[in-house]
Amino acid sequence: MDLLLLSRIQFAVTIAFHYIYPPLSIGLGILLVIMEAIYLKTRDPKYLAMTKFWAKVFGLTFAIGVATGIVMEFEFGTNWATYSRYVGDVFGSALAAEGIFAFFLESGFLALVLFGWDKVKPAVHMFATAMVCLGAHFSSIWIVVAGSWMQTPAGYHIVGEGMDARAEITDFWAMVFNPSSMDRLSHVVMGCWQSGAFLVLSISAYYLLKKRHLEFARASMKIGLVLAVVSSLGQLVTGHSSAQIAAQYQPAKLAAIEGHYETTPAALYLLGWVDAKSETTHGLKVPGLLSWLVHGDAEKPVTGLKEFAPQDRPPVNVVFQSYHLMVAIGMLLIALSLAGAFLWWRGTLFTNAVILKLFVLSVLGPQIANQAGWMTAEVGRQPWIVYGLMRTSEGLSKTVTANMVLGSLIAFTLIYLLLFVLFIYLLDRKIKIGPVEGKMATGGHMA
Image 1 (cartoon, one colour):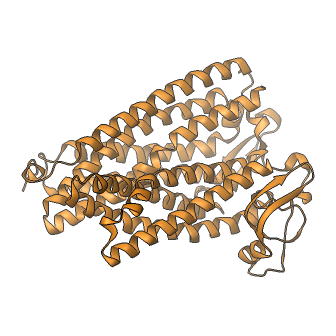
Image 2 (cartoon, rainbow, N blue to C red; image 1 turned 90 degrees about the horizontal axis):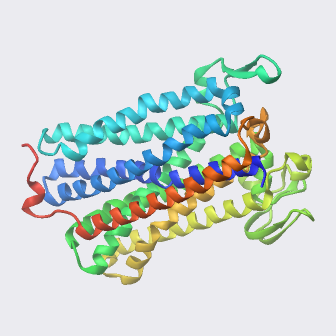
Image 3 (cartoon, one colour; image 1 turned 30 degrees about the vertical axis):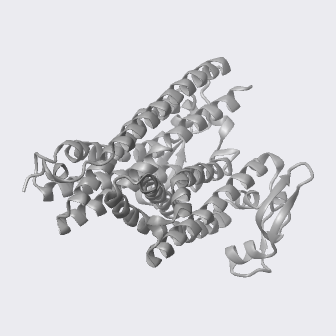
């Protein structure tokens, strides 16, 4: 295996594992705000118990997320030093903003959220919870801005030549609001909200099936289900908008998403397989639907992959399969959340064993869809590390060898597996212990 492939695999493993946790934190953050606000309004102790329980889960995901995210920062300097030197002024500004405006805000107030119940008044604690939620969302904003700039660079110019060339910001806000950043941000946030919502639904459904903490589980499920419906339907809108941006600025990625080779009116595949050697795609499709979604006209052509040299095309079948996996799961989550809402309206949600068992398993859906969506976006950008400016092969460090990367890849993978086992163990313990209900739940909160 060569240095480029190993470096890409290492970064993919690192970010894929890390990306399990921030979406959970962001989704749980908005739910904590809702739950605590309901408690302040109603003074119903079950909502206090609810907020305390989910705050502990939030703290766990935040801690593992921080531990796994630090490694990526170092990889920019070890594996991708040439890239970092080239775009450091641009990419570094977004990462610095994430640290200053997001991480410190979130981590600074988190201690108050977790341990301040008996130290501050309820309104102050509510403010701390809102700041934690805001910090988590700010973190997503700056990370998505940095990633989006790599997809659709704007607000910069190139100074120097050859090995000394680098990108410098000429317009900070043009960089922030680059053509894809807001569409990608809305899509990412909806995925994060789904992650938090379906985690709440999963654990609540588990309690209902086990006949434990029934009042807590019913109330948690109602709140989680509302967010699940909103975020799942929101993915349809934001995903459509993101595809239109790709059609305009990254036509090769859009063509790879649907295995579209000829510049003709394009079908939308429900499922299929791409034969890159023969440049054909086989599967179940709806003729003209991609053209209609992108252009509003089923007869209008969509740029095909044959318009690009073979070396300028992304790995087509990987992008095709990851995208369609994401869409399939997204549609299933919409169906599941709407079915849950219907049964809630009918008054049978909390006693329907089939839907409850599906909700227990549903926690995996947003995680798999988020990973597949990330793979679609990042692999679909290949062979560019910064679209149209720098190829991935050009961004590698000059002094790192393949053996070095392989050794660290094996070590990181083992460490990440241990961290994942620890996360599952601690989460399982918290679930088994459950929320503190009754009079104990109201203790330790200043009047």
